Length: 220
Image 1 (cartoon, helix red, strand yellow):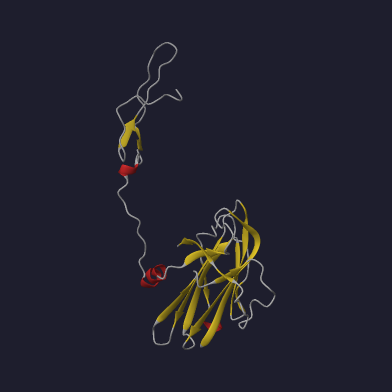
Image 2 (tube, rainbow, N blue to C red; image 1 turned 135 degrees about the vertical axis):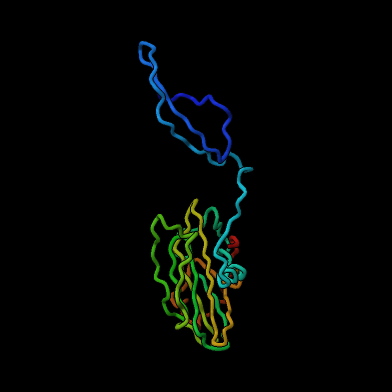
């Protein structure tokens, strides 16, 4: 009465099948049929899939994706195979013609990330819980109050890496001006990256000329 292999007609994807059972006792007397039950087949092969991925197509999200932020890391390390364990530091200088009306920083790193704008802490480092994938979760941080007209510096510290441990960092700063226009500054080869930064690396006037350009790891 258990582990009886199915031996009926061929089963097809997305079809509902009904079944019922009866039993025989040791004397060969059979019972009445049970009530009917049913199961439904799933999708059995790639050819059975006809759907397409969909999403809530908000203009701001679409334009964020189109700005093409990239996963980056320190040049010379194998971010997808065997990067150094420890603190990795990233910097980007950019200019604004005027103080923004508002700004939002989207940022993620493996395994923990801290961020600063013009030396001000905007994100404290913390290790995300195991159920919250650091690769798939960009933290969203209001950042407008830390920006100013002229030169600005966005900096981040990512603690991660290690043998056989993937590593990466990604960021997008969305800046909205008073006239309604939006500028986006994204992680990519314009960033500088280094494994071991000096103590004053967060200062807006810090000279990062000796730092290498960040290495591209993957597109978003």
